[in-house]
Length: 240
Image (cartoon, rainbow, N blue to C red):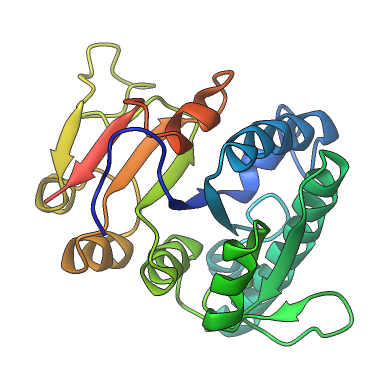
């Protein structure tokens, strides 16, 4: 799994649930998800094989519920169900944009989506379908960032694309520090040592140990999603 210039062959896109909210405080904003679908369609029609891992923070977040007194395992399973709801919304938006899409879940919900089976997921990608991966790893205590790293490695993705609300990795919080410096490139070890909280540590270590490049970019900027999938130098590249 090595980075290539020009269009990637296969990518895994990590979307947070919050990315679907737009300026709402909760739920899904149709205009936002339609714009994402249009950009994904552009890259897919250019020949990029695309898998997506979606979070559920716009609806439920297990860790947050646990801090308020709910059992953590119960909260995490509720969060997994929220990711399935988001995945179905993405599938609908993609199909409206003319892209064949399949939702695959790490927990069994046969009435609404397929089970995640690695070989089947790869086959969908080879046939030109976008695969939306829901329910994280299917296990509590693991974030959807970790699920994204795991799935990217399993399907042989060339890169893991982490969509955020900032244009890359900074040496400090750019919201709090106007003098924060953005990195063009940074190593996995520096992310961990300097506690640059782009993804959780487990996800970063999995990328590092499997030599999976990670690109962090600003999803809110028009066409950035297409550029990232096409291999352009947007945001910050994290490698060994």
